[in-house]
Amino acid sequence: MKENKIEGVIFNKLNIIKVPGGDVYHGLKKSDLEFNGFGEAYFSSIYYKEVKAWKKHKRMTMNLIVPVGQVKFVFKNEANLFTEYIIGENNYGRITVSPNVWFGFQGVSKNKSLILNLSNIIHSPEESEKVNMIDINYNWEFK
Figure 1 (cartoon, rainbow, N blue to C red):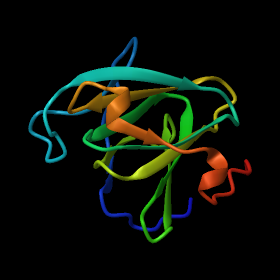
Figure 2 (spheres, rainbow, N blue to C red):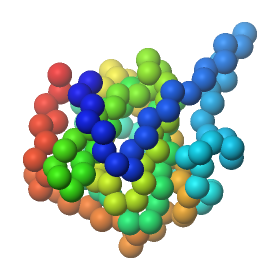
Figure 3 (cartoon, rainbow, N blue to C red):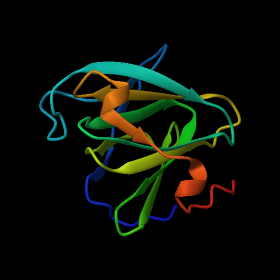
């Protein structure tokens, strides 16, 4: 995993509490520094090798968690530097993304992966901006 620090992107390892019959996966607490209020929680799914890119939110702070599968997230700053994180069952954690950071993601599990976004505002199409994958020069070739 290639990692450059991008301002506005924070990764935190999260606890998994082993419990007979099924484990407990932490997500986000009101006491966490990255908690910026609550707007909504929603799930996105992605299939193996598929890519969803590029988008940025103008006002939304995202808290991204992958409780099922594995997903590669890629973030880009204005200097065209990229940061990659692969999170999910094998690297359980939360990525907090501030507004105005371009991002995309790719499914890296053989089965469908599930992404949870705990956001500080309710999603609105006017609040986000999208560009085509070819508009941002990044090689999504699956490795």
